Image 1 (cartoon, rainbow, N blue to C red):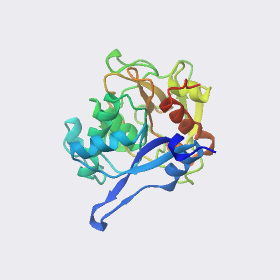
Image 2 (cartoon, rainbow, N blue to C red):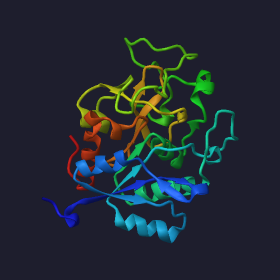
Image 3 (cartoon, rainbow, N blue to C red):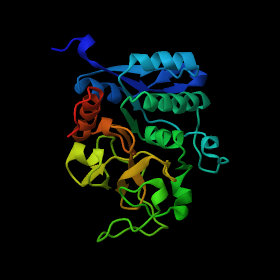
Image 4 (cartoon, helix red, strand yellow):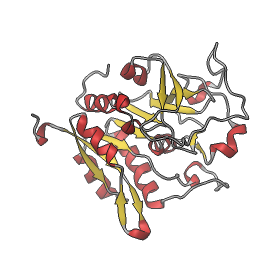
Amino acid sequence: MKTKEEQVVIGITCGRKENEAHFYLSQAYVKAVQEASGLPVILPGCTGQKEMTGLLRLIQGLILSGGGDVDPVYFSEEPLPGLGEIDPARDIFELNFTRLALTAGIPVLGICRGMQVLNIAFGGSVYQDMFTQVKERPVSRLGTQADQGKSDFLPGHQVLSEASCLEHYQKAPRRYPTHKVKIAAGTILARIFGVTELRVNSFHHQAVHQLAPGFIVSALAVDGIIEGIESINHSFVLGLQWHPENLEEHRVLFRALIKACKKEPVK
């Protein structure tokens, strides 16, 4: 049995209830890391540079957890109708801490809001509310970078019209997948799962809009909404729009994160 000293320490960001003066995080994240033989550490939203640097020294991997919306000021937009609750302190911490983590070469897994934080931190944007902005949606291509333009979604596959959008906030249990995503060949995500298509759960009203430079699209829903991104400049920096911590068959992602922290090849 592994000792704590031998375990990989995975930092997990959490939400805050400012009015109630407490932090919160679903136990599913902690359980997923433990089952992958990692040691989970919940990270408080410290905004000082000294505190963030200290937290960074404690961890070998980072999970950016799900939660509320990011203030659109960070991607140069004014708030639109449909924007949800924001937490200014959490935004400051996660955006800055994510940049520090990537500079330090720490493997990162961004989940739901966490994927959006990854994208915004490096110059991308999100739909403030994709259900009201869906007509603006460009058709994305798997495996493309932000500066390579757009093309047809998937040759040979029917794509929903630009005025259509899947139900991305499911009315089903969190452990139940409700729609499929297509995975780009040759990506980290494809190597982890070994397939080109998955069914996922879905609990979001925001999504990646403009992709950040240095990232590619690794997964798409059939309506063209981006479901996965990854860095082309780091060995393991992956963002997912769904919640793998709630899906037993997707816990392989957490094992892959641990492997990346140990500098073992992700297969």
